[in-house]
Image (cartoon, helix red, strand yellow):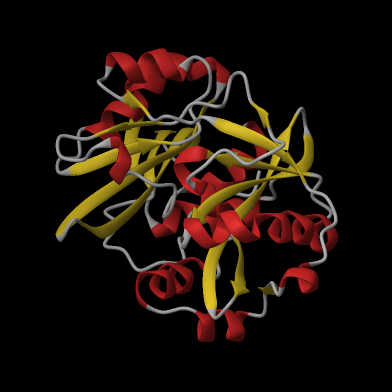
Length: 288
């Protein structure tokens, strides 16, 4: 009798606060409900049909699957993205969890990304025609490095970052400047600037790692990376950086390859893996 009252509903602006409280209580208590709520309202402009879907019994939230939407130019064409984010269902109602996933995937016209699928979700995604992205990752120790010795400058002030960027990188920065999980810097040398976006990550429950999400000029980044790693240590207390080859463009010297990098997946009828990035997603919005 009770199951017949359980419904799948889109998450609207009016539902954000209670879904955020549910995720704090049931999924990750380290993230405050207010932080979940801020993450669910992306900083970039988007014609989002919802914030994902929720499982409800009357007005009580029993589960949620967040989604982040964006529209971007890919090879001159407008492409609609839906990033599948946090998925949580109360233990007594796990049998209904797949209904949330089906509701998201039933939306036509999107390239879907899942950039942090948990262990059980990976084979499920594969059965639903998701493909794996190549997430070859190197672990780099963040060591002190005097940028002044090589004429390298790290820019972190928002106004100076804006003044240093143009074109697509400026647009990306403005879209993500207030994203809760995104950190930004510009590394400069010889009259050139490279925009770098990163997030703080946990490994073995330790928040001592950075993951690079975007590199605007891979050639310049390769030449100045040691200064960036040194900055992450000195400014943020981050001991090591996780650098994916598909993001930074190369495997850093003196790095350690990660034997089993965390999977990332996508499903698209139009795009290739090389056209999928980590922007406009939970990786920029949810600071776990």
